[in-house]
Image (tube, rainbow, N blue to C red; front, top):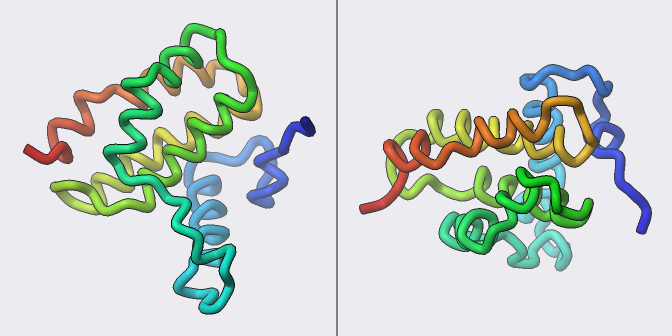
Length: 141
């Protein structure tokens, strides 16, 4: 399997800051969004996962733990990144969209850094995926 260079996919330098990474992601997300590509069957595929599905796959099923412990394959890291992107695209169960985007965007950036192998990325991922921060404001009762 060929390893994808996510910096290249996003069209940014490897030294890009968080804001640049988020902006590049948003630009691509809008470019390929099904609402902007009517009639494109691939764009309209319901591939996005709900927040509940993301939490189950990433957290309860142990994907995040596997990555933090260092036993994950590259495909696992890429899956986590895709799951966090799906979560960012979803409506927050409660709380402000601004806070939701900030918290989930941080998880996306950290996961992307893990995917490309940046130094300190796993520690950043562990910090950015602290469930308490999100649950306090966004977990539905």
